[in-house]
Amino acid sequence: MSSLVLPSYSPLVETVKTEAGDRSSQIWLLVNPKYPAVCRDIWIPILEVIQDKVYRQLHKRIDTKRIFIKNAVSDIGTVSRLSNLCSAEIAEEIAILRKSILKHQPKILVTFGPVTYELVRRMLEINQEGPKYWNTVDLENEFERSMADFDINRTNKIPLPRRVMVQGKFIDEGNDFWEDCDNYFAEIGTKIAARIMENKDSLNIWI
Image (cartoon, rainbow, N blue to C red):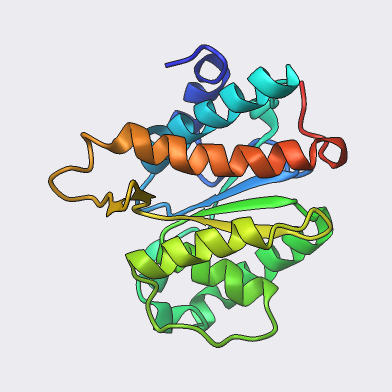
């Protein structure tokens, strides 16, 4: 993998317990502590694509050390189902995280998985209506919507889809996923990079 990301990033994703990085960063990453490898296996390849696209066009690099990574809640087991998101056990953590998001106003808030995305959606949206469970297609649709509706004047919640449409076919976590994972990383990274480059002058994320 490219040296643009890994030297400063690998130790971070290997050692993060509850949070890492800088809360004042305009890029936040909320993860499911049940799946810690997602940062290494999914986010870093996507970030490499973003860095490559940005550098080729702008000759700039994102300061990845400052990207704020946080577990959505300390014990994801208490919210393994969307119906548990409003339980008393996690109400305090949700309130603290909401307060932190509103205080620091990250411009890009990336989430992994249906529970984490729904948690953020309920924090940031007045309208709480939505599916009882975000399936693969739902998350893909939400990702595309987040790209189309990207607004640098607010926090943009960006759920990483578990599959993407490439040349008319879905890539899923089934038989062909790893054969096509480079296409997945390129598709997602390119779209996020485009939004970053469009708003380069309004983002304080550069080395």
